Length: 171
Image (cartoon, rainbow, N blue to C red; front, top):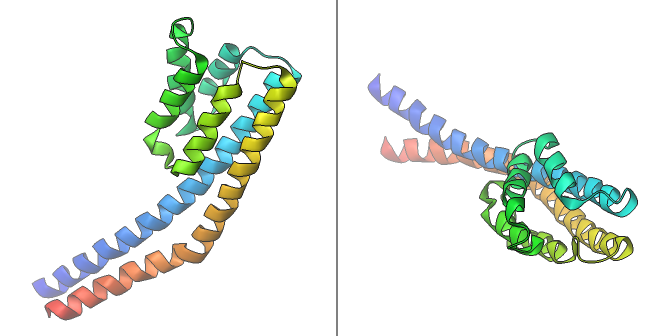
């Protein structure tokens, strides 16, 4: 009886690990989609409506869903030091500290590079920087979706198979 309960616990734990991996892949896709939507909104507000960056960051900090809201909240909190620090340094520090976004180094660098242009150039130059960042992030989103579609179920099944394998070895 106890060995059957132990076997079920082992299988349950490995299945949970597989499902957790599958969930993280989905969360990554949702985060990239949200980030693209946020950048498109920023592009429209900055380039078309000429909204000041501090007001826009404050608005995004209130309106974005987690985990992106925490990124914009951090930028918004640090905007108090805008005269002492450049917007780029505030933006870069927030991107680097946003571990919960699960961005790859290339995606982080794309966002950091975008920060170099924000607020420093005219609307058309910033539009170009946004377009470049959006194209790159959309490419990363397509790759993440493909990876989730192809590997998500594999991770869940591998969790189950690993659990059964461990139970067989232990018996």
